[in-house]
Length: 221
Image (cartoon, rainbow, N blue to C red):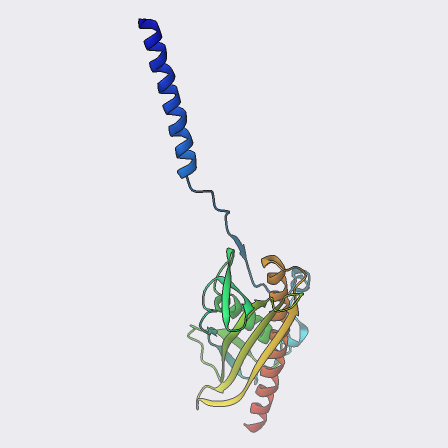
């Protein structure tokens, strides 16, 4: 009789342990996937390896110095979230995919590189800096979003730019640039690739805009 009771107690204890283990497994939250981080990058490495463009090296010593202020981002685009749109006026972001930094911070050195690759400026300097400049470039990211309205999705990048005479604060020229690039796949990675292409397209147009406005300003002096 004593042996049977002891065995029964052991069986009950084992059952309670199994139930407790199962309960812990049920209550433990499901593991969330690690986020993926993406970047806005400069032109392909192969082009960079070729060295600086000859046009940039030929800049005149009389060319103006351009001060580039860090870009400003409109509300909704001032965080590392990768934004997308399925319905008009409704911004959403991917849960497990992010930019490595805010779009504005990633864009700043790309702006300097793109404009610096023209022969229009003696130097292109990103603030904060102690350097004095003749002209100033102010930019604002209006939107950088993947749009799923109709297949294929596309990434739209809109940038507003002002070229200002630094001494007088006079706006010499302003323009809004936009590029919409189809995505090869309707997922965050496809959107990131399209975003980089859209940014490069806009930066090429921005560089030409700044060079033209700078030449016009020089002719006035």
